[in-house]
Length: 153
Image (cartoon, rainbow, N blue to C red):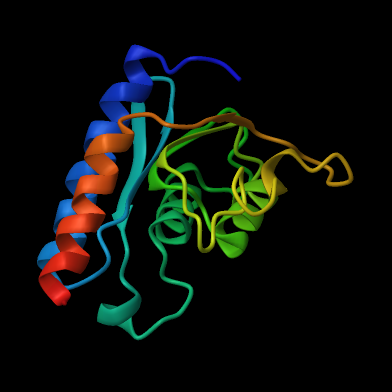
């Protein structure tokens, strides 16, 4: 596992801002940013409630927008910063999109399938694997989640 770069930290800050936008809509505060080098291709946040769409996770929304931006589904050479460890659907989408690197904030003990409950992004039987950098700005990510769920109780 590599260390996060200055660019990764900047992109995680953008993902945290996107998570704040999600919370302001009553969505679980998860944000994602797809980038290539220093260029932001897409920013997104959870939209499951807003769009009544079970697949509208921040990662999937960001991948769709990034693919449109570059004009192809393959996002080789791209990284994604996400505030929460991706679930099985999102981890699979990252593999299928051929994303090169995943930078994420906090582990998800209930659904995380990158390091916690499984390792889909590094599965040797798949035709693509991602570099994974976990724990980037984890405290900022977890605090947003705690505040959101505390307010709902």
